[in-house]
Length: 293
Length: 337
Image (cartoon, rainbow over all chains, first blue to last red; front, side):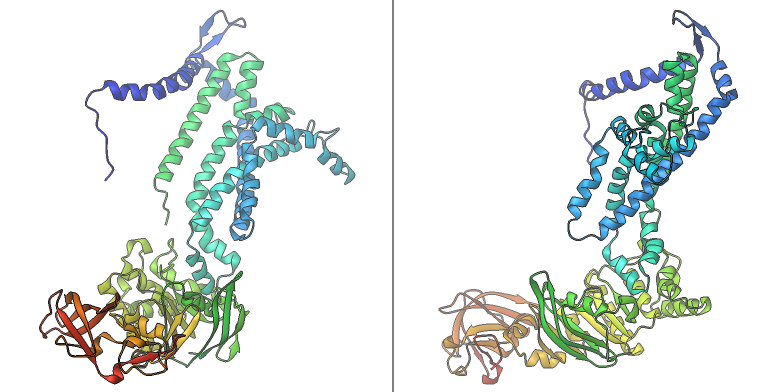
């Protein structure tokens, strides 16, 4: 049984809880409340007055083809980021799990990219793929491929996906490696004796036993791709070309802070709030019954 | 069904030698138990036969064919692990069928073989359950079932009973023995429990620090141990060892003398071969263990006597006696002389 501490009065527990409650209230509840409030108004261009429009901002957004396109962009982007970073991480984790010598070095090096801030990672990749001085685009040019993510929408998407996935591989790698190491060695050996070769073992034993880890990472990575890739997109493409990389979060920023349409921006925030809430519910619901087997 | 031959098997992990040349000839259908203390290399030896560890030098032959470089899956063996190693995401049925499915056995035959194994092991009510819904004993049976359905040439057991409670262990021990003799499949069984070794083995291999000290039928090993280690390891309570110099009329070539507790009798003080003082007694009902400290020594000395005999009290001065042929003489190096 878990041991519970019981307090006699309410003063001490309140004092102990206060710091967390204040931080949550100031930095989360208050801005979220503001966003919901503002989403119901249209402010004038100078910010001096606001006009009540009810759900007008939402109505306008749902009828806006640019906004709907941004949904598709976000879906494509997050699926690509999730699949790329998880697939690559799983591959590396399987290899690292088989290593006996020098695995510590590999692990350390593989974890480093996670420590790089998204904006910095974005700049690194931007330099490498810069259409004029980038080393990768230069080599691509030698191969006869004219790389230009500033004009080509698919290339722009590819670049932000790679830059966003790169640091994420480290994070996913850690979880996959831990998951792989939690599988008892004797189970793998039993499968080997039962006649399963490496790929069969992976498909029928290892991957199913990894499913709780995989599911957890799936949700976490989608949330990451939705919300935390702002820095990468801002530094590399600023949402372009032609809004090809404007994901929902980036649109909140560009509509609100660049175009000064605060009402619409607030409404978009509220929609994102609902999405992240739904994702969190899904995560909790399934992670609660973590054991799928 | 198969013969197994281990020919001068050696194993090193890096610079550490763990097995120093083991030779064992196993006949078709024989039940061989490898017994020894932790770290003696017994599990490593078994894993080499399974193909889960490489052989540093020497040869392993199954049915006369050298299998050193053969993958585990191609050796036609089945193994039962200490922690059972069941596939946690598969039902009992799927666990047992896994190997057959991979071997592309026809569906009807898989069903039939799994049903037969389930009947043999009384697992029929649990076929749809997952391993986590089973008790330790049931999981053990599933692990056995998974081995049986494949009809392998050789069964390998790696301490399969050590995670079970005492009562279940005795029951499963009997079942394993019964099953093996019914199926007639050659079995290699590793354990640190000498009772399991004595009761299961047709022949047992006593391992000590990477060497097979003695190979033989259990009773022969018990009554005629070839090394001091075997004499001390097999038998409970353990054999008493004394310096030959402290014993009147010990064999001249002997450095140490071993005497089994049941071969020693208590005698009134002043008589017998040696004298000592009773430290404490353990009355177990059918038998009594008397622990002594011999005069002029610090080691304890154990006597096992009939439970009906009178019980000495701690502090009593007593003497001990034995027949001449109860003495097992060992050389300085621990070999029997």
